[in-house]
Image (cartoon, rainbow, N blue to C red; front, side, top):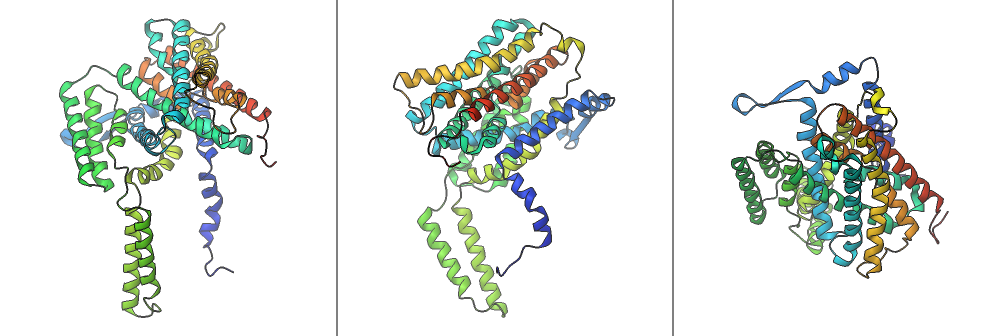
Length: 443
């Protein structure tokens, strides 16, 4: 029997903690938020849904106060934290992940480019130019949380190499989205504010090189950077990506150094006495403090930040974004046949363009000898994952909000995103499930 037993509250909360650690959990919450938004926006209380997100919120005081509707605080401020995590994930993959090795990176990079260019071309061909044409970036996106959630539902039917491929593809896809947003979905630029933002980025890089590692330093300057970017005309969420690039990715001590420090601290803790005297208690606390310090020095601030923020993004920020943006009042003109060009362009872009663009681009680089398929991955399985790339949802909704004016066209875009994401996710799941478990995988 264990010397320690969990208190009742821990036993009660254990199932919820287990759920929160599941890859599927964030996707389930995201789906739930989208459903709530749709039901609310089509209920007798639809006016309260619209009024809630238009509620003005003031942050700050005096000359430093910012007043925005609640929906803009969600889309500009909270989503900047989402993009901070996206930036950290991109940086991690480039430094130590699948994108570090050029040959291994070639496959997901090519697939992501193919899965971005073809959907955009299909959208423009169907929806044309003008006001609707501004939405060409909508079908370029892949929702990594949804896509990986579907893979998690398939369990052992999905080889590890396929999960790694989809993760790397989605991260490259996010990088493409960041570039597209920064260049094509920003407003009139204010050179003074851009210079201020550049100055903060340079200061952050200098602090990084000087050894500054405390998160408060980066958080405080990150807020200043966000304000400068917000006022510059570049979309405010880009500040999150810029901040991510400046956060230290190295550790202060290596693995042998940490092991030696940890052993020394544990030895001091063990030999501090029986804990009955004040001196022994103080000695043990000192040993624990040193152990905690060594553990902190052995961790990269970048990875610690990702680990800390990821639950907040997955379980609060992204579902809140879906709740604020997925609510569309279904009016007759939105579901009329034939579908509006915006709806058709998005559905064809995500459902047809993604799966063809990803598969063909991957086949071309493998055929050319530039890349190889990961272990355990067949072309059939890669094709199934290419369908999952058509789940645009979060990033597609975000680009739609940036590119299209409020009104019928934006509502049509949201309908197209929801329909396409359901089709792509359902077909991708069905294909991968029908393929069964890879050879040698236990049943």
